[in-house]
Length: 185
Picture (spheres, rainbow, N blue to C red):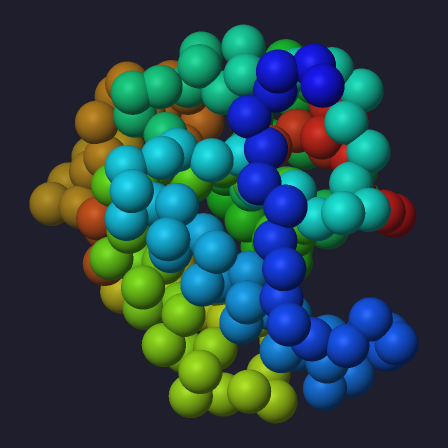
């Protein structure tokens, strides 16, 4: 009604039991992967939220400041800001990336499609594991890279925006500020 592009997903799963960690909860994670893969394959750059996410303002201006370098921006279960300026910039990469990444609210650029396809395969191959943990596991393949010098140095434009690299150094990632994109904690 407000002309905001949205997509409501029909999972085909029961609505009776989605308690955290249940079989249906894990199946829903796979459906989420499938939806995201479809959107990225169509060239979309979605901001993905779970149904229980609270959004108090338009996140687009924040995301657009990090483009074109940012490919994945994800919230974190880090329970405190990594510095005082983190409300208006990404969290400090080395500190915030050590916590769980919370995929209840995240942005993806369509160029991250190969990593997301890998994530979907991992969810299919490991139906008893949590899609959120598998998401981070995929991006940690080849290790997370923060280097500002040497053979694995990332470009200064990415460092300046507090981005780091994952998925064999092929995807730029940022941890959204907890003060602005707060999780359920």
